Image (cartoon, rainbow, N blue to C red; front, side, top):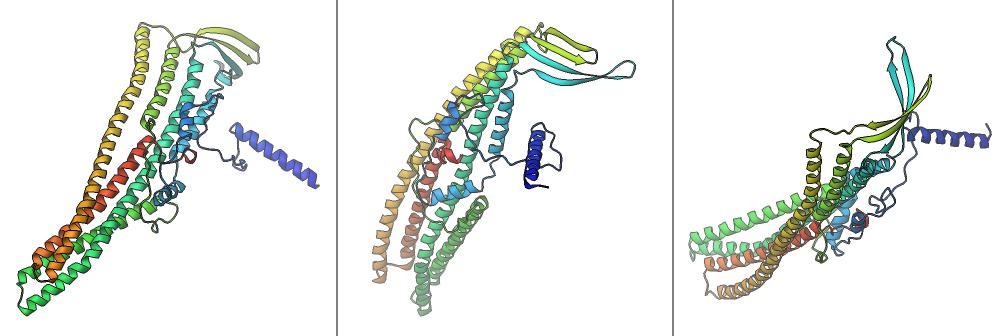
Length: 432
C-alpha cells in the first residue's frame, strides 16, 4: 500500500472512530482521541456569558507567604484527587446539553400491532410554547455549574487547611520537644547532684525522689511531643505528593482581604440562583404547553399540533404554584442566613485569633521573666543559698512557661489560616 493511501486510510479510520464516539457507538476495538487538558474553572458559561461567581473565584489570591506553609499547600495540591473537579466537569457537560434543549427531538417509535406485526416509525417533536420551561432548564444547568465551581473551591481550601493544621500541630509539638530536650540536660544535672548529696548524707532521699519524679515527667512530655509530631507528619505525608519531613518553621499568613465574601455565602448565592431556576421550571411544568409533532412511517407522514403536554390544570394547581413561589423566596432567604452565619463565624474566629495573639505575647513575656528568675535562682543554688526542691520548682515553672508560649504562638497562626480558608484565599484561583 502506498504511503499516501495508508495515511488517508488512517485519517479516515480516526474520523469514523471520533464520529461513532460522539454518538455513543464506540466499539471495544476503537480508541478515542484524548481530550486536550482544560482549566477546571472557566468563567465563560455554555451560553457565552461570563459568570461573575467563577470570575470572582479565579481572582482570589493566596495569603500564604513564601516558605514552608506555601510548600505544604503546593505538596498537597499536587496529590489532590479533585473529586469536586469531576463533579464540575459533569455539571458543565449537563449545561452544554441543556443549551440545545430547544431543538426538536427525533426518535424511533416501535409498536406491536394487534395482528402481531411490528410497526416502526420516526417521531419528530418540537415545543412551540412551554411557559419558559426550556429557558429555565438552561438557567438551572448554568447555575449548577457555578455551584459545582464553588464546591471545588471549598474542597480545595478545606484540603489545604487540613494539611496546614497537621503541619502546624507537628511544628508546635517539635517546638515543645526542643524546649523539653534542652531542659532535660539541666534536670539530669540536678538528679546527679542529688544522688551525690544523698550518698554523702547531706540531703534526704525524699529530695532525690522529688527530682527523679520531675525528670521522669519531662521524659514523658518529650516522648509525647515527639509522638504527636510523628503522627501529624505521617498524616500530612499521606496527603502530599512530595516529601514534607524536611520542612520546618513557619511562614507568614496574611490577613484575608477586607470586604471579601465567604465561600459559604458565594455558594448560597449560586444555590439561590439554581433554586430560582428550578422553581421556574417546576412552575412551567405545571401549566399546559403546545407542541408540534410529525410521524414518518410506511404509510406516509402525519403532522399535528398538541395542546396540553405533561402539564395540566387541576384543583390543586393554585396551591402548587404558591408552594413553588414560597420555595423561591426561601432560597433567597438562605443567602441572608448564610451571610449572617459567615459574619458570626468570622467574628468568632477573629476574636479567638486576637485572644491567641494576646496570650502568645503575654506567654512570651512570662517565659522571658521566668528565665530571668531561673538564672538568679541558679546562681543562688550554686552559692548554696537555695535548696534543691525550690530550685527545681523554679526551673520547672520556666520550662512550662516556654512550652506554653510555643503552643500559643502556633495556635494563633492556625486560627489566621482558618479565617483565610473560610474566605477562600488559601489557594490561588488559577490553581483550583
